[in-house]
Length: 433
Image 1: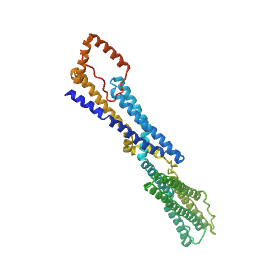
Image 2 (image 1 turned 90 degrees about the vertical axis):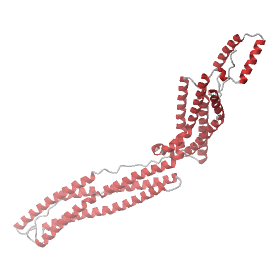
Image 3 (image 1 turned 30 degrees about the vertical axis):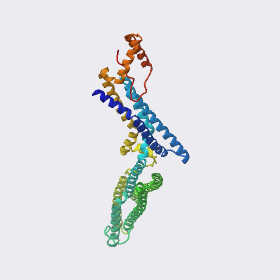
Image 4 (image 1 turned 60 degrees about the horizontal axis):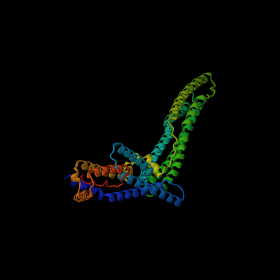
Protein backbone atom coordinates (compact mmCIF):
# COMPACT_ATOMS: atom_id res chain seq x y z
CA UNK A 1 0.00 0.00 0.00
CA UNK A 2 2.84 2.42 0.87
CA UNK A 3 4.57 1.64 -2.41
CA UNK A 4 1.41 2.48 -4.34
CA UNK A 5 1.09 5.77 -2.46
CA UNK A 6 4.67 6.71 -3.31
CA UNK A 7 4.09 5.95 -6.97
CA UNK A 8 0.95 8.06 -7.02
CA UNK A 9 2.76 10.97 -5.39
CA UNK A 10 5.65 10.62 -7.85
CA UNK A 11 3.27 10.52 -10.79
CA UNK A 12 1.45 13.59 -9.42
CA UNK A 13 4.69 15.58 -9.19
CA UNK A 14 5.53 14.73 -12.78
CA UNK A 15 2.00 15.56 -13.93
CA UNK A 16 1.91 19.05 -12.40
CA UNK A 17 5.41 20.04 -13.52
CA UNK A 18 4.15 21.66 -16.73
CA UNK A 19 1.24 23.28 -14.91
CA UNK A 20 3.66 24.68 -12.33
CA UNK A 21 5.80 26.31 -15.00
CA UNK A 22 2.69 27.66 -16.70
CA UNK A 23 1.37 29.11 -13.41
CA UNK A 24 4.72 30.78 -12.71
CA UNK A 25 4.71 32.33 -16.18
CA UNK A 26 1.14 33.62 -15.93
CA UNK A 27 1.66 35.10 -12.48
CA UNK A 28 4.89 36.76 -13.57
CA UNK A 29 3.13 38.17 -16.65
CA UNK A 30 0.23 39.51 -14.58
CA UNK A 31 2.62 41.14 -12.17
CA UNK A 32 4.48 42.69 -15.09
CA UNK A 33 1.30 44.14 -16.57
CA UNK A 34 0.26 45.83 -13.32
CA UNK A 35 3.83 46.94 -12.73
CA UNK A 36 3.74 48.60 -16.15
CA UNK A 37 0.56 50.49 -15.22
CA UNK A 38 2.05 51.54 -11.89
CA UNK A 39 5.31 52.73 -13.45
CA UNK A 40 3.49 54.83 -16.03
CA UNK A 41 1.68 56.70 -13.26
CA UNK A 42 4.92 57.94 -11.67
CA UNK A 43 7.11 58.65 -14.72
CA UNK A 44 7.30 62.05 -16.38
CA UNK A 45 8.38 62.93 -19.89
CA UNK A 46 7.22 62.33 -23.42
CA UNK A 47 4.66 59.62 -24.06
CA UNK A 48 7.15 57.55 -26.07
CA UNK A 49 9.86 57.69 -23.42
CA UNK A 50 7.41 56.81 -20.67
CA UNK A 51 6.02 53.90 -22.69
CA UNK A 52 9.39 52.29 -23.41
CA UNK A 53 10.73 52.92 -19.91
CA UNK A 54 7.67 51.34 -18.29
CA UNK A 55 7.72 48.43 -20.76
CA UNK A 56 11.39 47.65 -20.14
CA UNK A 57 11.01 47.86 -16.37
CA UNK A 58 7.91 45.66 -16.29
CA UNK A 59 9.57 43.10 -18.60
CA UNK A 60 12.60 42.94 -16.32
CA UNK A 61 10.30 42.46 -13.32
CA UNK A 62 8.41 39.61 -15.03
CA UNK A 63 11.63 37.81 -15.99
CA UNK A 64 13.09 38.27 -12.52
CA UNK A 65 9.99 36.93 -10.79
CA UNK A 66 9.72 33.92 -13.11
CA UNK A 67 13.43 33.09 -12.78
CA UNK A 68 13.44 33.43 -9.01
CA UNK A 69 10.47 31.13 -8.41
CA UNK A 70 11.71 28.63 -11.01
CA UNK A 71 15.04 28.40 -9.22
CA UNK A 72 13.31 27.98 -5.89
CA UNK A 73 11.01 25.25 -7.25
CA UNK A 74 14.02 23.44 -8.74
CA UNK A 75 16.22 23.43 -5.65
CA UNK A 76 14.26 24.02 -2.46
CA UNK A 77 12.25 20.73 -2.37
CA UNK A 78 15.47 18.69 -2.70
CA UNK A 79 17.44 20.40 0.09
CA UNK A 80 17.07 18.12 3.13
CA UNK A 81 19.64 19.40 5.61
CA UNK A 82 18.53 21.77 8.36
CA UNK A 83 21.22 24.32 7.60
CA UNK A 84 20.56 24.15 3.87
CA UNK A 85 16.81 24.44 4.33
CA UNK A 86 17.25 27.47 6.62
CA UNK A 87 19.57 29.11 4.09
CA UNK A 88 17.06 28.54 1.31
CA UNK A 89 14.28 30.02 3.44
CA UNK A 90 16.46 33.07 4.05
CA UNK A 91 17.04 33.44 0.33
CA UNK A 92 13.30 33.10 -0.28
CA UNK A 93 12.51 35.78 2.31
CA UNK A 94 15.07 38.12 0.76
CA UNK A 95 13.66 37.47 -2.70
CA UNK A 96 10.10 38.11 -1.52
CA UNK A 97 11.16 41.42 0.03
CA UNK A 98 12.87 42.46 -3.20
CA UNK A 99 9.82 41.46 -5.26
CA UNK A 100 7.52 43.50 -3.01
CA UNK A 101 9.90 46.46 -3.26
CA UNK A 102 10.20 46.42 -7.04
CA UNK A 103 6.76 45.17 -8.04
CA UNK A 104 4.04 44.75 -5.41
CA UNK A 105 3.70 48.41 -4.43
CA UNK A 106 3.44 49.33 -8.12
CA UNK A 107 0.78 46.64 -8.54
CA UNK A 108 -1.10 48.20 -5.63
CA UNK A 109 -0.74 51.61 -7.28
CA UNK A 110 -2.30 50.23 -10.46
CA UNK A 111 -5.12 48.52 -8.54
CA UNK A 112 -6.00 51.30 -6.09
CA UNK A 113 -4.08 54.39 -7.26
CA UNK A 114 -7.14 56.36 -8.37
CA UNK A 115 -9.05 55.50 -5.18
CA UNK A 116 -6.05 56.50 -3.06
CA UNK A 117 -5.80 59.87 -4.82
CA UNK A 118 -9.52 60.44 -4.24
CA UNK A 119 -8.94 59.59 -0.59
CA UNK A 120 -6.17 62.18 -0.46
CA UNK A 121 -8.39 64.82 -2.05
CA UNK A 122 -11.28 63.95 0.30
CA UNK A 123 -9.13 64.32 3.42
CA UNK A 124 -7.67 67.57 2.11
CA UNK A 125 -11.21 68.82 1.52
CA UNK A 126 -12.14 68.03 5.12
CA UNK A 127 -9.09 69.92 6.40
CA UNK A 128 -9.83 73.02 4.34
CA UNK A 129 -13.50 72.91 5.34
CA UNK A 130 -12.46 73.00 8.99
CA UNK A 131 -10.01 75.85 8.27
CA UNK A 132 -12.71 77.91 6.54
CA UNK A 133 -15.13 77.38 9.44
CA UNK A 134 -12.48 78.35 11.97
CA UNK A 135 -11.51 81.49 10.02
CA UNK A 136 -15.17 82.43 9.70
CA UNK A 137 -15.76 82.01 13.43
CA UNK A 138 -12.68 84.08 14.26
CA UNK A 139 -13.78 86.84 11.92
CA UNK A 140 -17.30 86.90 13.37
CA UNK A 141 -16.17 86.74 16.98
CA UNK A 142 -16.22 90.54 17.26
CA UNK A 143 -19.91 90.46 16.41
CA UNK A 144 -20.55 89.23 19.95
CA UNK A 145 -19.51 92.69 21.19
CA UNK A 146 -22.17 94.42 19.15
CA UNK A 147 -25.03 94.09 21.70
CA UNK A 148 -22.89 95.63 24.47
CA UNK A 149 -21.80 98.49 22.22
CA UNK A 150 -25.36 99.16 21.08
CA UNK A 151 -26.65 99.08 24.64
CA UNK A 152 -23.98 101.54 25.84
CA UNK A 153 -24.55 103.84 22.86
CA UNK A 154 -28.28 103.88 23.47
CA UNK A 155 -27.74 104.65 27.16
CA UNK A 156 -25.49 107.63 26.41
CA UNK A 157 -27.86 108.89 23.74
CA UNK A 158 -30.87 108.51 26.03
CA UNK A 159 -29.14 110.39 28.84
CA UNK A 160 -28.23 113.17 26.41
CA UNK A 161 -31.85 113.46 25.29
CA UNK A 162 -33.11 113.43 28.84
CA UNK A 163 -30.62 116.07 29.91
CA UNK A 164 -31.56 118.26 26.95
CA UNK A 165 -35.28 117.94 27.51
CA UNK A 166 -35.71 117.60 31.29
CA UNK A 167 -32.33 118.31 32.85
CA UNK A 168 -32.28 114.83 34.35
CA UNK A 169 -28.59 115.01 35.27
CA UNK A 170 -27.88 118.62 36.18
CA UNK A 171 -31.38 119.80 36.92
CA UNK A 172 -31.21 122.36 34.11
CA UNK A 173 -32.65 121.80 30.64
CA UNK A 174 -30.85 122.69 27.42
CA UNK A 175 -27.90 121.55 25.36
CA UNK A 176 -24.97 122.26 27.61
CA UNK A 177 -21.59 120.66 28.24
CA UNK A 178 -23.09 117.45 29.61
CA UNK A 179 -25.31 116.97 26.59
CA UNK A 180 -22.34 117.65 24.33
CA UNK A 181 -20.18 115.04 26.12
CA UNK A 182 -22.88 112.38 26.14
CA UNK A 183 -23.59 112.95 22.45
CA UNK A 184 -19.84 112.70 21.74
CA UNK A 185 -19.61 109.30 23.47
CA UNK A 186 -22.73 108.05 21.73
CA UNK A 187 -21.31 109.16 18.36
CA UNK A 188 -18.04 107.29 18.92
CA UNK A 189 -19.89 104.13 19.86
CA UNK A 190 -22.10 104.51 16.80
CA UNK A 191 -19.03 104.67 14.56
CA UNK A 192 -17.69 101.51 16.20
CA UNK A 193 -21.04 99.80 15.66
CA UNK A 194 -21.05 100.78 12.00
CA UNK A 195 -17.54 99.39 11.59
CA UNK A 196 -18.58 96.03 13.05
CA UNK A 197 -21.63 95.87 10.79
CA UNK A 198 -19.52 96.65 7.72
CA UNK A 199 -17.06 93.95 8.77
CA UNK A 200 -19.89 91.43 9.03
CA UNK A 201 -20.93 92.11 5.45
CA UNK A 202 -17.34 91.65 4.26
CA UNK A 203 -17.02 88.40 6.24
CA UNK A 204 -20.28 87.08 4.80
CA UNK A 205 -19.10 87.81 1.26
CA UNK A 206 -15.78 86.04 1.79
CA UNK A 207 -17.43 83.07 3.46
CA UNK A 208 -19.83 82.64 0.55
CA UNK A 209 -16.88 82.73 -1.84
CA UNK A 210 -15.08 80.09 0.22
CA UNK A 211 -18.14 77.84 0.21
CA UNK A 212 -18.26 78.03 -3.58
CA UNK A 213 -14.67 76.82 -3.71
CA UNK A 214 -15.55 73.97 -1.35
CA UNK A 215 -18.53 72.96 -3.45
CA UNK A 216 -16.36 72.80 -6.56
CA UNK A 217 -13.72 70.77 -4.70
CA UNK A 218 -16.38 68.39 -3.39
CA UNK A 219 -17.67 67.88 -6.92
CA UNK A 220 -14.17 67.13 -8.19
CA UNK A 221 -13.60 64.49 -5.50
CA UNK A 222 -16.71 62.49 -6.38
CA UNK A 223 -16.88 63.16 -10.13
CA UNK A 224 -16.34 60.25 -12.56
CA UNK A 225 -13.47 60.13 -15.01
CA UNK A 226 -9.68 60.24 -14.84
CA UNK A 227 -8.29 61.38 -11.52
CA UNK A 228 -5.27 63.40 -12.72
CA UNK A 229 -7.23 66.20 -14.46
CA UNK A 230 -9.53 66.42 -11.45
CA UNK A 231 -6.54 66.63 -9.11
CA UNK A 232 -5.07 69.52 -11.16
CA UNK A 233 -8.33 71.46 -11.01
CA UNK A 234 -8.60 70.64 -7.30
CA UNK A 235 -5.19 72.24 -6.75
CA UNK A 236 -6.37 75.43 -8.48
CA UNK A 237 -9.42 75.57 -6.21
CA UNK A 238 -7.21 75.06 -3.15
CA UNK A 239 -5.18 78.13 -4.10
CA UNK A 240 -8.35 80.24 -4.32
CA UNK A 241 -9.70 78.90 -1.04
CA UNK A 242 -6.40 79.58 0.74
CA UNK A 243 -6.66 83.22 -0.36
CA UNK A 244 -10.19 83.44 1.03
CA UNK A 245 -9.10 81.99 4.40
CA UNK A 246 -6.22 84.47 4.60
CA UNK A 247 -8.58 87.35 3.83
CA UNK A 248 -10.96 86.19 6.56
CA UNK A 249 -8.11 86.14 9.05
CA UNK A 250 -7.22 89.71 8.12
CA UNK A 251 -10.86 90.91 8.17
CA UNK A 252 -11.35 90.47 11.90
CA UNK A 253 -12.56 93.71 13.50
CA UNK A 254 -11.33 92.70 16.96
CA UNK A 255 -8.08 94.77 16.81
CA UNK A 256 -10.06 97.83 15.75
CA UNK A 257 -12.52 97.26 18.58
CA UNK A 258 -9.68 97.09 21.08
CA UNK A 259 -8.17 100.34 19.82
CA UNK A 260 -11.56 102.06 19.84
CA UNK A 261 -12.25 100.84 23.38
CA UNK A 262 -8.94 102.24 24.59
CA UNK A 263 -9.63 105.55 22.83
CA UNK A 264 -12.88 105.91 24.76
CA UNK A 265 -10.94 106.14 28.01
CA UNK A 266 -7.53 107.47 27.00
CA UNK A 267 -8.92 109.98 24.53
CA UNK A 268 -11.66 111.21 26.85
CA UNK A 269 -11.76 115.02 26.71
CA UNK A 270 -14.41 116.57 28.90
CA UNK A 271 -15.61 120.01 27.82
CA UNK A 272 -15.41 122.95 30.21
CA UNK A 273 -18.57 123.53 32.18
CA UNK A 274 -20.48 126.29 30.45
CA UNK A 275 -23.00 127.04 33.19
CA UNK A 276 -23.34 130.77 33.88
CA UNK A 277 -24.09 130.11 37.49
CA UNK A 278 -21.47 128.64 39.77
CA UNK A 279 -23.86 126.08 41.14
CA UNK A 280 -24.74 124.87 37.65
CA UNK A 281 -21.10 124.67 36.64
CA UNK A 282 -20.35 122.62 39.72
CA UNK A 283 -23.16 120.23 38.92
CA UNK A 284 -21.91 119.91 35.35
CA UNK A 285 -18.38 119.08 36.55
CA UNK A 286 -19.76 116.39 38.87
CA UNK A 287 -21.87 114.81 36.11
CA UNK A 288 -18.96 114.88 33.63
CA UNK A 289 -16.73 113.16 36.20
CA UNK A 290 -19.39 110.51 36.60
CA UNK A 291 -19.53 110.11 32.83
CA UNK A 292 -15.71 109.79 32.76
CA UNK A 293 -15.89 106.93 35.29
CA UNK A 294 -18.65 105.22 33.30
CA UNK A 295 -16.71 105.56 30.04
CA UNK A 296 -13.56 104.17 31.68
CA UNK A 297 -15.46 101.15 32.99
CA UNK A 298 -17.08 100.51 29.63
CA UNK A 299 -13.72 100.90 27.88
CA UNK A 300 -12.16 98.30 30.17
CA UNK A 301 -14.96 95.83 29.53
CA UNK A 302 -14.74 96.21 25.75
CA UNK A 303 -10.95 96.00 25.80
CA UNK A 304 -11.00 92.75 27.81
CA UNK A 305 -13.60 91.26 25.48
CA UNK A 306 -11.47 92.21 22.46
CA UNK A 307 -8.43 90.59 24.11
CA UNK A 308 -10.33 87.33 24.50
CA UNK A 309 -11.19 87.41 20.81
CA UNK A 310 -7.58 88.16 19.84
CA UNK A 311 -6.41 85.20 21.95
CA UNK A 312 -8.30 82.79 19.70
CA UNK A 313 -6.07 80.31 17.93
CA UNK A 314 -5.47 81.51 14.36
CA UNK A 315 -5.92 79.19 11.39
CA UNK A 316 -2.70 77.25 10.81
CA UNK A 317 -1.09 77.72 7.45
CA UNK A 318 -1.79 74.70 5.28
CA UNK A 319 -0.12 73.69 2.03
CA UNK A 320 -1.69 71.22 -0.36
CA UNK A 321 0.82 68.64 -1.62
CA UNK A 322 -0.22 66.82 -4.82
CA UNK A 323 0.61 63.09 -4.79
CA UNK A 324 1.12 60.51 -7.49
CA UNK A 325 -0.99 57.38 -7.35
CA UNK A 326 1.97 55.35 -6.06
CA UNK A 327 2.67 57.86 -3.27
CA UNK A 328 -1.01 57.99 -2.35
CA UNK A 329 -1.18 54.19 -2.09
CA UNK A 330 1.78 54.20 0.30
CA UNK A 331 0.40 57.05 2.45
CA UNK A 332 -3.09 55.55 2.74
CA UNK A 333 -2.03 51.89 2.74
CA UNK A 334 -4.20 51.15 5.78
CA UNK A 335 -7.33 52.13 3.85
CA UNK A 336 -6.56 49.80 0.93
CA UNK A 337 -5.51 46.56 2.60
CA UNK A 338 -7.47 44.33 0.13
CA UNK A 339 -5.68 45.94 -2.83
CA UNK A 340 -2.31 45.50 -1.15
CA UNK A 341 -3.16 41.88 -0.33
CA UNK A 342 -4.07 41.18 -3.95
CA UNK A 343 -0.96 42.92 -5.28
CA UNK A 344 1.36 40.98 -2.96
CA UNK A 345 -0.44 37.67 -3.50
CA UNK A 346 0.20 37.82 -7.26
CA UNK A 347 3.93 37.94 -6.56
CA UNK A 348 4.13 35.59 -3.56
CA UNK A 349 1.63 32.87 -4.54
CA UNK A 350 4.38 30.70 -6.15
CA UNK A 351 5.86 30.24 -2.68
CA UNK A 352 2.74 28.27 -1.70
CA UNK A 353 3.21 25.94 -4.68
CA UNK A 354 6.86 25.47 -3.80
CA UNK A 355 6.02 24.56 -0.21
CA UNK A 356 3.49 22.02 -1.51
CA UNK A 357 6.15 20.42 -3.71
CA UNK A 358 8.54 20.41 -0.77
CA UNK A 359 6.01 18.59 1.43
CA UNK A 360 5.36 15.99 -1.28
CA UNK A 361 9.09 15.33 -1.81
CA UNK A 362 9.65 15.04 1.94
CA UNK A 363 6.83 12.48 2.13
CA UNK A 364 8.33 10.52 -0.73
CA UNK A 365 11.74 10.44 0.92
CA UNK A 366 10.31 9.26 4.25
CA UNK A 367 8.29 6.50 2.60
CA UNK A 368 11.22 5.26 0.53
CA UNK A 369 13.42 5.15 3.61
CA UNK A 370 10.90 2.96 5.45
CA UNK A 371 10.41 0.48 2.56
CA UNK A 372 12.67 -2.57 2.22
CA UNK A 373 14.72 -2.71 -0.94
CA UNK A 374 12.69 -5.67 -2.19
CA UNK A 375 9.54 -3.51 -2.22
CA UNK A 376 11.24 -0.60 -3.97
CA UNK A 377 12.53 -2.58 -6.96
CA UNK A 378 10.33 -3.29 -9.97
CA UNK A 379 10.03 -6.61 -11.84
CA UNK A 380 11.94 -5.26 -14.83
CA UNK A 381 14.77 -4.09 -12.59
CA UNK A 382 14.84 -7.53 -10.91
CA UNK A 383 15.17 -9.32 -14.28
CA UNK A 384 17.93 -6.94 -15.34
CA UNK A 385 19.77 -7.58 -12.05
CA UNK A 386 19.54 -11.36 -12.50
CA UNK A 387 20.83 -11.07 -16.06
CA UNK A 388 23.78 -8.99 -14.86
CA UNK A 389 24.52 -11.55 -12.15
CA UNK A 390 24.59 -14.40 -14.66
CA UNK A 391 26.93 -12.47 -16.95
CA UNK A 392 29.26 -11.72 -14.08
CA UNK A 393 29.36 -15.35 -12.96
CA UNK A 394 29.96 -16.49 -16.55
CA UNK A 395 33.08 -14.35 -16.74
CA UNK A 396 34.33 -15.53 -13.34
CA UNK A 397 34.17 -12.17 -11.56
CA UNK A 398 33.89 -12.05 -7.79
CA UNK A 399 30.51 -10.40 -7.15
CA UNK A 400 31.30 -9.14 -3.64
CA UNK A 401 34.51 -7.47 -4.78
CA UNK A 402 32.75 -5.88 -7.75
CA UNK A 403 29.94 -4.61 -5.54
CA UNK A 404 32.38 -2.99 -3.11
CA UNK A 405 34.20 -1.28 -5.97
CA UNK A 406 30.94 -0.08 -7.53
CA UNK A 407 29.67 1.34 -4.24
CA UNK A 408 32.92 3.27 -3.71
CA UNK A 409 32.79 4.64 -7.25
CA UNK A 410 29.14 5.61 -6.89
CA UNK A 411 29.78 7.43 -3.64
CA UNK A 412 32.58 9.42 -5.30
CA UNK A 413 30.41 10.29 -8.31
CA UNK A 414 27.47 11.38 -6.17
CA UNK A 415 29.68 13.74 -4.17
CA UNK A 416 30.69 15.59 -7.38
CA UNK A 417 27.45 15.58 -9.42
CA UNK A 418 24.24 17.47 -8.54
CA UNK A 419 20.85 16.48 -9.89
CA UNK A 420 18.65 19.21 -11.39
CA UNK A 421 15.60 16.99 -11.85
CA UNK A 422 12.45 18.85 -10.58
CA UNK A 423 10.71 15.58 -9.83
CA UNK A 424 13.49 14.42 -7.53
CA UNK A 425 13.66 11.03 -9.21
CA UNK A 426 17.05 9.36 -8.99
CA UNK A 427 18.34 6.11 -10.45
CA UNK A 428 17.27 3.04 -8.61
CA UNK A 429 19.90 0.61 -7.33
CA UNK A 430 19.87 -3.00 -8.28
CA UNK A 431 19.44 -5.72 -5.71
CA UNK A 432 22.43 -6.96 -3.82
CA UNK A 433 23.97 -10.15 -5.06
